[in-house]
Length: 453
Ligand code: SAH
Ligand code: SF4
Ligand code: F3S
Image 1 (tube, rainbow, N blue to C red):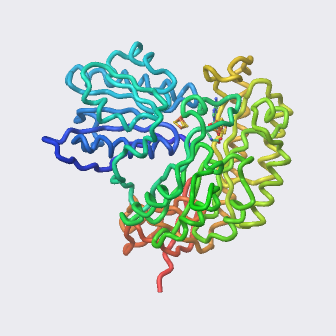
Image 2: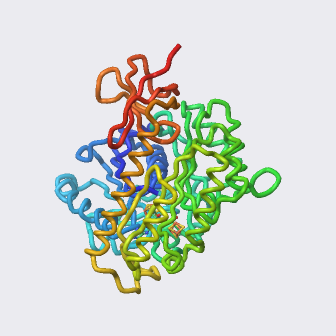
Image 3: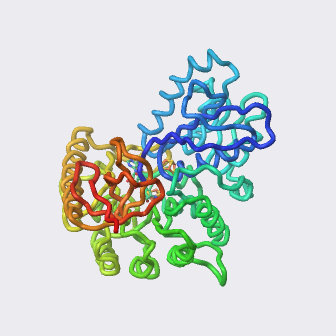
C-alpha cells in the first residue's frame, strides 16, 4: 500500500449535541488508514464533532499514524512537537494518536509526548466517543472481542464519487521485515452481507467506484450465503450493484491470487484493469529470507496467467532494496524481474529495520549501497511508467471525474488504468464517467479530450 499523507475534509454532522466542536484529522500511511480516519470522523460526529481542515481552529487533533518504516513513525513525533504552541494557547485542545504507531508504542507515546491526551489502536477506535469524554489520559490498544464495525455509525463522510471499503484486516503472513501482523493483528474478513450493505449505502450516496481494501485483500474469506466467499465471489456480487461502475482492490499477496479471482479479471467488466501485486525482490535467496514463500519464477508465471485473463492489465508493485544480506547479484535479479514484467507504476523503499521483526536482528547494509540501488531501481521504474503512459496516447479510455482541475474548463479524474487524467471539458462535473481520448503524457499524468456525441 502506498504512503500518502491525506487530510480528510469530510463533513460529519452533529447529532443531538450543543455547539459543534471541531476535529482535525491527519492521516499517515496506507489507504486503510484513510478509511479508518473517515470512520473515526463519523464516530466522533455522533459526539458533536465536525471536521475542519485548519488545525488552528480545532478542539481536537487526531493523528492517524503509520509504523511501517522508521521515517513514517518519527514524522508523528515531529508533528506532535509542532502542536505544542497550539496546546499552550488552548489548554482544552484534545490531542489523540490513533493507528499503527499507537498500537505499537501505546503508553510510551504519553511518556515521550506529555501533550497527548489519548492513544487508540486500529482495532478499538469505535470506543473513541467514550474516550474523548474521559477525564485525564486514556490508552486503548485492545484487540477487543467485539467487532468495531458493529459499533460504528452508518457511513457519512465521502470523498466524492470514489470510496474505500475495508473488507479484510490484519495479516498472518509475517514477512520478516514487516510490522503489520503486530500492529493490525491476525487476519480477519468481514461478513459479505455487511460489505454488500455498506457498498449499496455508498452507491446510494453517489459513489461510483469502490476500492476494496485489506492488508491482504485477496486472502479475503468472509462468511457469505452458502459458505465462505473468496474475493472473486465478493467482487462478482458487488459488480451486480446497480450504479456501481468500477471496482478495484488492494493490496494483494502473490500467493493468494486464486483461479476464481484471476477469472474475475476476465469476466467482470466493472473490475478495472489495474493490479497492485507487491513482489519486494526478484532474488529467490532474498525472497526466502523475507519469508515471502514464493520464488521470482512463480511470480512471473502468475503474471502470465493474469495477463492471459486480462491482456491490457497494468501492473504495479512494491520493492524493498537493501534488505539484510542483499548482494549486487540479488539486486540485479530484482532489476531483471522488473525488466521481465514491465510495470506501470511501483513503490520502492529502502529497507528500514523495525523493532520486534525478525529481520531487525540482522546486520544492515551500508546506507550508500541501499541509496544507490534505490536510485537505480527508481530510474528503471520511471522509464517503464513513462512508457506505459506513452502507450495510452491516442487511446480511448474511461475517466471518472473527481474534481475540477487547476485550469478553467478542466476536470481531473482517474482512467480505468488508474492514471490521473486532466481533461479539457467545460461541461464536466464530478461523478461523471466519460469516454476520453488521451492526447498527451506529462511526468505523472495524462491529458485528454472528452468524446461526446
Ligand atoms: N500487505 C501489503 C503491504 C504492506 S506495507 C503487502 O503485502 O504488500 C507496504 C509496503 O511497505 C510493503 O509492500 C513493503 O514494500 C514496504 N515495507 C514494509 N515494511 C518495510 C520495511 N521494514 N522497510 C521498508 N519497506 C517496508
Ligand atoms: Fe506485511 Fe507481508 Fe503481511 Fe504484507 S503480507 S502486510 S508485507 S507481513
Ligand atoms: Fe502503516 Fe499500519 Fe498501514 S503500519 S501501512 S498504517 S497498516
